[in-house]
Length: 529
Image 1 (cartoon, rainbow, N blue to C red):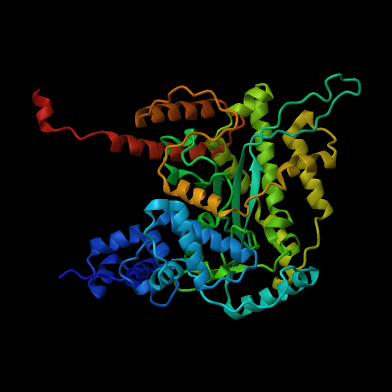
Image 2: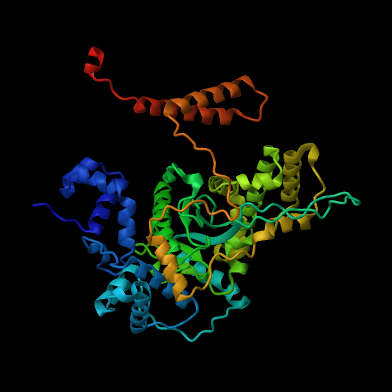
């Protein structure tokens, strides 16, 4: 008789393999077929997500994870719960049941048969890790004293538990907006002539650890579920995690999905690689889109979220101390660089920027943030938690930054006014990344996530439909790559260096293997036709 294994049993077997044991030996010890173990390893992320979403002690022991019967209601109600808790509203089980019944009537109208029973409430709380807690009488507002006291609290947590510290925060990005400042001659009649600001936006979630050695793949949230630029693109190969919502805002559902499906597996993988304890906390601000910290924890409780004191994030949150600003600076510079390289008028160029461009610009900008920048920002915000102080940027740091700028600009280098640079980077600093929504808006957003609609590009100013891009073969890609390598080798004075050539040759080897795999094996009967 075939045995049904619990989620926890599957994870325990996978962990033994991850710890170095061979699949054959684990199979003999556990009595699980080797093929079954391979399947569990392949689906480890799904198992982690399933176990993490069951927060009670019996959750990982279940053999089947039961989802919500009405996914639209489930998502809308959880968003409402997160929003209400952010506003400091005490909630009970009876209040949840009344709100669920109300939302169900709005969703299903005359076809509503939903009953908010005690059993339904128990399953809803179990799915989302909602616990009953005592609400303290503290004021919602926080002050500078809270920010000053928190590093000591964090240091006690680190000393007690010996874990890794991460921080995550959202930022909005106008990915087509060009600077609204320009240099001009004093008597130039066109000095105030500009162009309409393009306000197409995305929200980017950045996360990293204290040392800066682990920068996680950033989720990018657009308005379109299936942007035209990503048609026929394998999204698992993208350098970001693409998500979507109606206004390109972060939502509690998206954040929870990213935490369990991306953050926890990525952190476990990194800690295993570094041979560190698999224990970590993620510091979060009190954004309305962030679910309660009690709902953000791995199944074993070793990786969890902790909320910073309210209204203190601008003072102590590491990402707000300069990391996000540096990230946006690289994004803006990349946009300007591509504009100059295109030799197109700005109004024409910005219409050609697609979601795929945004994704790779985001990846480039995030990769340019150095470990020293991240470490300095952590010191500035929470230095006392690590017995480290932020001493500011030295004269050498400033000199090197100026030298890099002049080297980048060459003969075009200008004596740039610092205020104009600040304004160019800060144009989307106040861009909202979440909002408080009505019941109707929550239900509409939940429906849009549940529907498998094939929506198109989200641009406010529609692009001209691009010509049909044919599906390229492995042979065509290989031929183009070989020509590119020949060009690099024949032009030693070009901007490509030896590292670029090495990467191109590694890619060439991979492409050759793909060409071999793509060729169908000949049958012996083919030779007698």
